[in-house]
Image 1: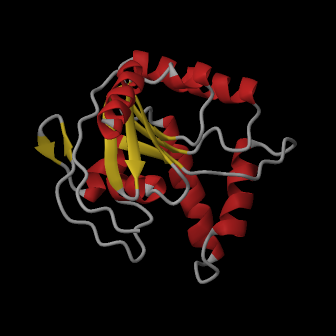
Image 2: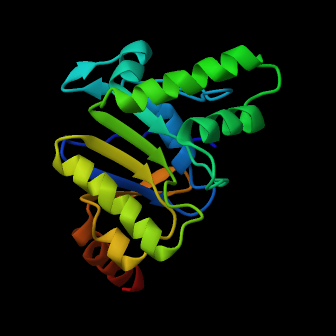
Amino acid sequence: MYIPIVTGIVRSGELLAIMGASGSGKTTLMNAMTMRNLGKLKVSGRFMVNGKTVKRSALTGMSAYIQQEDLFIGTLTVREHLRFQALLRMDKEIKYQQRMERVEQLIQEVLTDPPLLFCDEPTSGLDSYMAQQVVSLMKSLAEKGKTVVSTIHQPSSEVFVMFDQILLLAEGRIAFLGQAHRAISFFRQYVALSNS
């Protein structure tokens, strides 16, 4: 996925939804923003926090990245679930000890109460009630001063209105970035202009 230029601002105390169709670049953008899971991804540019350029090591220390997890077993503890996911999903060439260290690192990231929280498809696989509960929790974290960025696919209208800002991607480009309640009027204007 090639995402040409993406520029935007997310303020503390805000909940930002990164939306778009499957394959639009949501997860790619999230990986670039968090400087994690880059693989073959070539990222250039700057990531700034409070007006200062931040390096990868500093960003990792001040943020948590909750990746999309489709598989959850209700009888496992959180630590057991994370270990299971590490064994199941991480590259086979990564040694067992390194996987377990990554699990412990992730637990520490979340427990250190970071000011930046990135969530990749946190409502994936959830029913509408649970999806609303998850986004409500993210909203309450934002209201406590955290910056929360989340990718989300096809939110219900109840979930959509909880987001302060929307970044809508289409084919790797920003189609809209602004307040959630202004998105509908923006697209009404766009359609009206396109039809005239």
